[in-house]
Image (cartoon, rainbow, N blue to C red):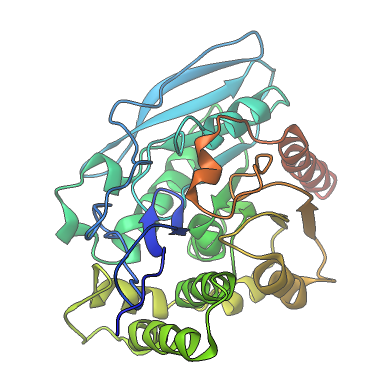
Length: 362
């Protein structure tokens, strides 16, 4: 007998999220393609429109349209505060899925908010279109997390390190970018001064997907046998992903085995634990994609007490660090908003305090 459950799991610019709808299946675990952001059997109303994201100017800062230098360059924006000297610069690393330089989702542009807010506080930033957004037809070229994110992040670090208008380089990662920020720093050969992790996790992406499904199943208030049937299906879909290696082939939940294998090869917790640079971990209490209990607290258990590591938790903020509408699905992001100013203030304070400490030690 088939039961009708109003749910599916969808992948878009900010990662995996739960969308409620009518589906005549016991469970439907559908993920959009990691590589090109197209949905398998579903439509994505929050897809980024081409051409969004650009340069602005104000009394506090100037923005210059540049390129991230690579074999296939990416459009980028360098935001410079109108202050003297060489300001520190923050490189902004997106979450999962195709995204423009502003990390646009619906009417919201969290990376533009952060860039402009930091510039008003005397800090430069560099943000760029994600490769999956700029070149969606080149999926074979980024069938690993290195091709999708890490190579471009490394190029951005090197480009900013060589830019004579800015000083020390920091990396700010959001969502999956927060998960990868320690790896970006570890692979930079000392060129990254500090990292900021917004709604990141030291756990695996598969663990996040499992948690989201379990929360959803619990919310449906099913009979025990029905709930167990759905749980069994989730495990059947997700468990194979945990052990995929570089020699495995085939597609799994819309992505090639090579992608999952590249993620499995990164132990974020171990990488972060081995870093000796300042780190700031940030999380909203009303984030339904990355949780306080399982992710923010995992960072604290791993890094609390370490010199230079700080933790900030924000009541009532969602995955975009904007005020929540109270919904725990993708419609949360339909409302136009801005990144909470306190979040930007805390990022700026973290960087300025570290800059002061760096100067005192030289």
